[in-house]
Image 1 (cartoon, rainbow, N blue to C red):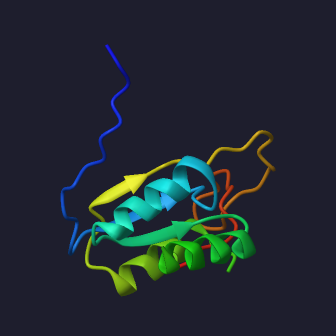
Image 2 (cartoon, one colour; image 1 turned 90 degrees about the vertical axis):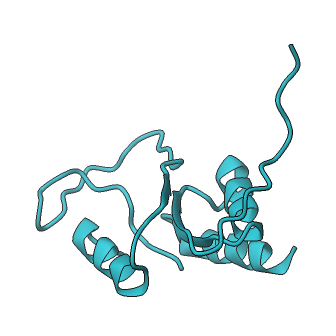
Image 3 (tube, rainbow, N blue to C red; image 1 turned 120 degrees about the vertical axis):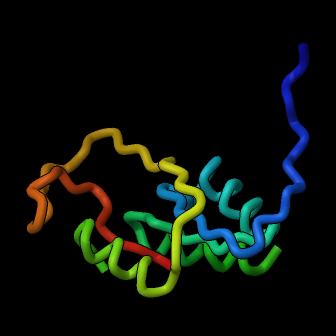
Length: 111
């Protein structure tokens, strides 16, 4: 049995996806694929420079708490249809959000 390599051709027009850790690798390729198929892709990355570079690459071929991040997303998008949790951290820096006191890792959000 060989590896499955055929990409989906399903159109995603009108769908909104959030992808974490998508400035390189599998996340970036996933963002590119969803974008090409018509989805609105929100890139949630820790490094805005790398995320902007990746976003520009994809277009061409604030530090936020959990609540602020979701508020920004909901201001622009009626709903989220796809969530791809791809971000990975080798050593997670210790931090807590103001509202929930949960550990925080996401530092910046790029549209």
